[in-house]
Image 1 (cartoon, rainbow, N blue to C red):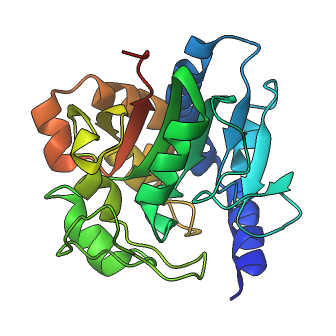
Image 2: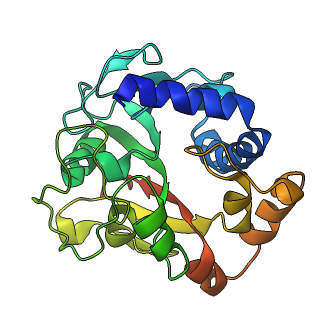
Length: 252
């Protein structure tokens, strides 16, 4: 299956599955809360638009949908590792399930540091590798999960094929449920990582499957909210997803 077929399939599954629509609605609510902090006139870029599921939830916002390949869902073709924007020209860069597909993710982070205005942010929703989620991503997920990798700012973590990936990468770079910075990689960006999605995500069946858990489908929003309220320790063991907020600090 090529990328266009894959994206069309995702779009089709999404349109037919109420459970995944509800889960994504809650997920994008977390994203929107962060976007709203930058004000209504912000310049916003989405990277890795994929099947453009964002337009179901952010249609009232003005933003550019971009991807590494031209598809019917994109506004622009953009290589996240070499952003075609001037310095300090963007307020928000966001992406859902894209960071772990970028072959040289630190090239992207350096580009984000260059293009973001001070006070701007990169917002990423990514897989989270926890004791509970590890076997799911390792054995049941269609994309690779390679945990035993060394993190280096010059390393390459996947091939040029946009479908290649490593689901472990976000948790290796941005440690789960932590606050930190990227200065050890010579990048002046701060980050926070917040895990979410446990039973709510499993109940939805995910975007790559036609299945779900019908008995729980009507309670996904309620379950999602309950999970968010749980302790950091609980979420660090059980959750499957993470919201990573990467901010560019004010000049020193």
